[in-house]
Amino acid sequence: MTSSNNFGIVLSFFGLWITTTFSVEYQQTIGFVIIFLFGILHGSNDLQLISKINHEKTATIGKKILFYYIVFVLFGIVLFYSLPKIALLLFLIVSAYHFGEQHWNILNTKKTSKIIIAFQTTYGLFILSLLFNFHQAEVRRIIEQIINTPITFVNFTYFLIFNGLLLLVSGLLLVKRSANFKDEILVNMVYLILFGIIFRNANLIWAFAIYFIIWHSLPSIKEQINFLYGSYSLKNFIRYFKSAFVYWILSLMGILLLYLLFKDQEIFKALFFSFLAAITFPHTLVIMKMQNIK
Picture (cartoon, rainbow, N blue to C red):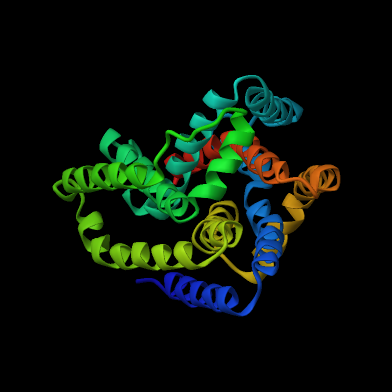
């Protein structure tokens, strides 16, 4: 167990303390704030990552990359508008892989095997289904607003059990192929228990924020800084923040506009997650390329 994971456990229990101390409204507000601060930030430096990646390959970088990135984000938004069911399914799968890849990046190799990709995706799906299981009514309402179709036939408990079985099978296959994986099994079982406790006791937004920020965004920022500048330090974090600042502010302005237009409506949560999805698609591809180079 690394020191950063120890820090994550401490912060997670601090998050649980907030759950028992503040009202649901305060939890939700705090959750949105830290997602805006750190969650959006961790995906705001993709262009510099692309520049670093392409410099090592072709040394060609410029406005064309920014153009393609914006087109990719706009494509995600249009997809959610025109084909919301397909877009939501893609978002769940891509987000699941992205979460699993970050959490299990010790498994990545220059040519990551299909079984590793399958395990990482299944792990992310299990995390999401664990969250959905403890907030079924609210998740159902958000999904129905995104796809504009009732989903009363969906049982999130069965979804959790199904993903749990897939995780078990893919984990057993991976045991035979990776010594690193064997060493991490026990501690990650403890993490899953911790996540379950958090998801059960916290408001949906606050529960998502605790996992998304502490166990995904902050480790990702640290990893990106190591990749860009060679080491993690306060000085390099400031360099990272300055580089990401413009794109971070633009993203915040987009979310702020959604909030001002729909703050008194339940649909804001659906729009918020749709916005996250649109910027998640290209970000996941960038991180995949970064992992391959590492």
